[in-house]
Length: 245
Length: 148
Image 1 (cartoon, chains in turn blue, orange):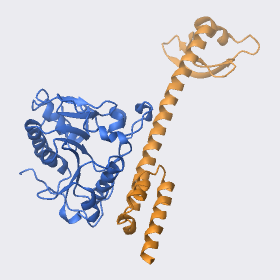
Image 2 (tube, chains in turn green, yellow):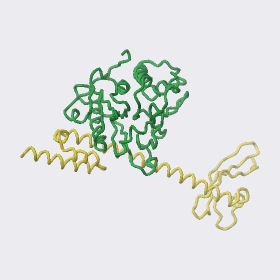
Image 3 (cartoon, one colour):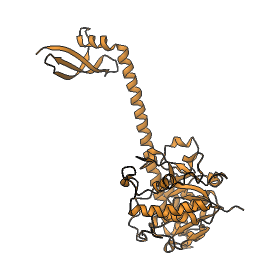
Image 4 (cartoon, rainbow over the protein chains, first blue to last red):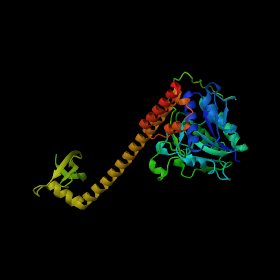
């Protein structure tokens, strides 16, 4: 029996917890046997979550807006699909989420569409890989990169040690996509791991794209954007910096 | 001050019947200066020297080709604009629908309901109205259970 599954992360804003529950339920609507693990704060866990998640991990989960980066290496699965909590599954093809990862690949990702992105090109490069949904396999090196990704993103929020002419701070600082780019291109990991691109990647991470990118096929995963909402919920847990862990 | 030259700049058809041309007429003076004036030119009586000069210098075929190319460009821009507007509307609709579904699942009776099929039907609703109606049906079912 395979040990493949999905991980969802909900931290800081309670709205992400509600959305993660909705997202997990939408996976189960189309793939009832799916195993899904939630990383979240213990205060938020309720009966519904206990019913639907295969595992709920609350120990040491950082109160960070990018706790996802911390959680990636803690997946209990051999092949994991990471999905942003504000996504929704819309097709039975979600069953293929782990099969698209070929034996030679470490991770498969979608491509950013410049017309639907806040940032793509900057003087020293271009962000091309979307980090809102991807499938990856358990690997010592990849997990080391994920852990570095979290620490580097946290550090990136408090200090900018790059030449701002080449890497404009005001343009790139908030984005974990840039941190990933930096790991691949400036820290030298690009040739160490094999990154694949989803076949029909628009279907797998439909993020406000033009519908003709679907080539007549149905959306598998619709990626919504809740980032600017839910600021004032009394259940929110303040974000802390974890750059020193 | 003597006029030494009269130039026609960017002439183009501005009527569907192609019997009116818009252009800039530049009048150059012997002291080196010039004046530009926007002009609408037609030739109903076959005696307008500006019309004759434009036809001579640019030809009807060139004006036709220019306007066809401009129309193709305009249609392309319009199509792109329409597609972008459609994408924006689609995205706003989907975001709005998702938020309505999240709100429906904040209702205690719906959140705690064990009726997985009805809850899935709410999640799979394609419009806000559909999700609200399905939510209302489940809410009534759950409230009826409480009364029993």
